[in-house]
Every structure is written in C-alpha cells, then in structure tokens.
Length: 326
Image 1 (cartoon, rainbow, N blue to C red):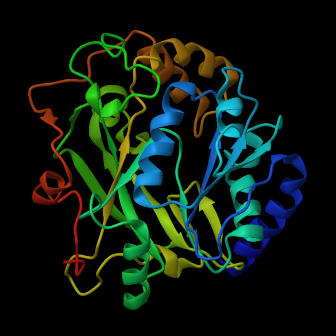
Image 2 (tube, rainbow, N blue to C red):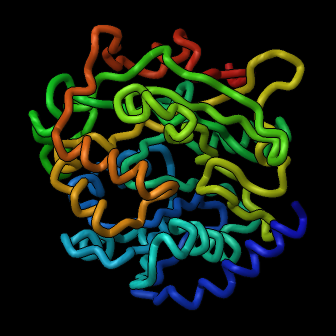
C-alpha cells in the first residue's frame, strides 16, 4: 500500500500538466477548501455554491473538464473560486481523481478539505447550526482525520423528467424521496474501508447484478496531508488510517450523508450523451444498459419509498450518526 500511495502521488504530479490555470483566487490560512471536477452542471452550480458557503467553505477549487453550457463562466464570476481547465480525458485521469490529487498535494496539505461532485450536497448532524469549522475542530480533538458519509440517492415521485427543477433552485424541492432500508455493508480488508451498496440504483438498474451497483461510501471531508492520496474516487484513500472512521469497539462513530441529486430531470437527456462519451466508471457494457434505462425516464418511486425530512430522520433510520458529536 505504501508503494501504491507513492505511485498515485507520482501519477498526480504528471497529470497536473493537463491542468491550465484559468483563474487563481486567494484564500485565508484557515479556510476550508472545496475541490470539485465539473462538466456541464449549469442547472446545479448555483445551489451547490450556496449550500457549501452556508456550511462554511472558504474557497472553491474547480477543475472544469470542457463545459459547454456556461458552467465555467458562472464559476469565473464568483469571488471565492479558483478554476483550472482541462480538455484531457476524464476517464484517463482516473475519473478526475488524478487532477484532484494534484491540487490537494499542492494546496490542501495541513488543512481540512471537502471533495464533492456537483450533484452531492453534504449534510451531517446539526449541520444547519454548526458549520464545518466547528465539526473539523471537534474531529481534530478526537484524532479523526476524515468524516464518512453515505451517498443517499434522492429521486422524484413519477418519471424522472416529470417535474423540472429551475436552474439555481433547491433540488430537494423536486427530489424528495429516498430508499430507507435496502442497503448492504461489507468490510474491505485491503484498504480497511467499508463498502455500502443498495438504494434505488441497485434495485432499479442492477437488480440482476447487485455486486455491480454503485459504491455509496464516501469521505467528503478530510484533513489532508502531502503524503495522502485518493485511491478509488473518494470511496477510499491512503494511508489506510483515513478509512478507519468506524468504531471498532462496536459503537457508532460520527457519519453524515451526501444527498445525491443525480436524478434531476436533465439526466434523461444527458444519459444518451454520456453513453456515447463513455467516460463512466466501471464495466462499459453494464453502464450502457444503465444509460439506456435512464433515457426512458423511469419512475424510481415505489411503495417502500420514504419522503426526505431532514438529518434527524436519517439518524432515526440509522443512515447517519452523531457519534460523540452531541
């Protein structure tokens, strides 16, 4: 694992040559940074920025992978953003993680960083009243270098393109249902991490091959160091101590949720485009079938679906935990 970590860091240094500075902002010494690889997310980006500013992010570092819908200009117009551009292959950069590793190696060492996709909104116990800075301070006192979060797929009731979410609006106005209980969890000893699978994508698109369902475990908030590296998206990192966020004595550690807004109405028209681009993660044939299914605007709602009400509800369901963060 030490050699793997070194190889991935070296790879990131090489891949940094694919990044071109478009706008370089400034940030304070103690600012929490957010890093994101993005492409054509005009309908989400305003709310994404609003949400993470509310959480207390001090500065945003974006890698724009050739957006064509005005996303880059929106990012450039913000006072608290830095933007790098790249026309290189997202897939060949390990789905953007080589670029993120390169930026974190240069700018993230010694500070708390958020890494999230444009369709991921982080919440955690007391998130409305306790900013990320307070949470990071508490994690420091606990000697914990990362905050885990389960990716929670949200979806509408009815066809995926049945109700539009206006650009800049809160996507939870439309995406307000989720699966409460069909999840499985396993321990992966090589990286000492947890693997969670399930939810609406598993039951609707991977019911015949559940082992190919997307991984839902992520580490969206991390105290970074120059010798760290992301391994598999933000599902796992090295050194392995970053993945040991669970309570090994049998109790509950703190955990948040990444509200996944992937299933906005625009996904139906984007699915055929993404199928042709073939920049997806995993087996191509499996994901071709997935994109074909999404393009049909299926209804993911079922009788067991649960309406989203807030973090307290997720805690009662056992999907997030406050641990000692009382």
